[in-house]
Amino acid sequence: MVIQRSGKLYKQTYKNGVPASTLTEAVSLGSESGTSITFTPNKELFTCGFNVLSVEKYLENLQFMLPNCEIVLKEMGN
Image 1 (tube, rainbow, N blue to C red):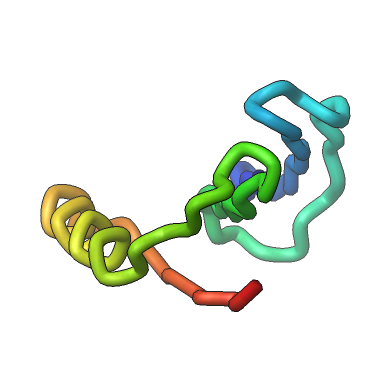
Image 2: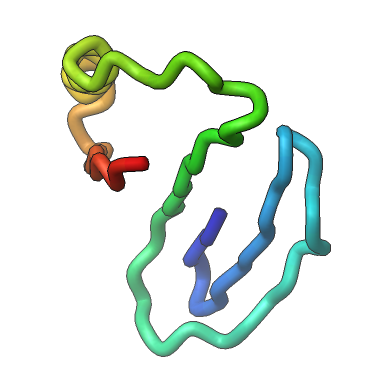
């Protein structure tokens, strides 16, 4: 997870929903703000895979409810 706000950049990583690092703070060079979240499924927990079309449809519906939110789906393969 990366958060940019008030000229600062904050980062934290998670593993299985639990913080795997402390929240770190760094100086950001821009005045932009926002949050970036990257989800990588744990292959031990998600053994059956994902239906990409179902995930895409869910994210399209979510995008409709959050018009100022940019959602990017990247299929990385196995």
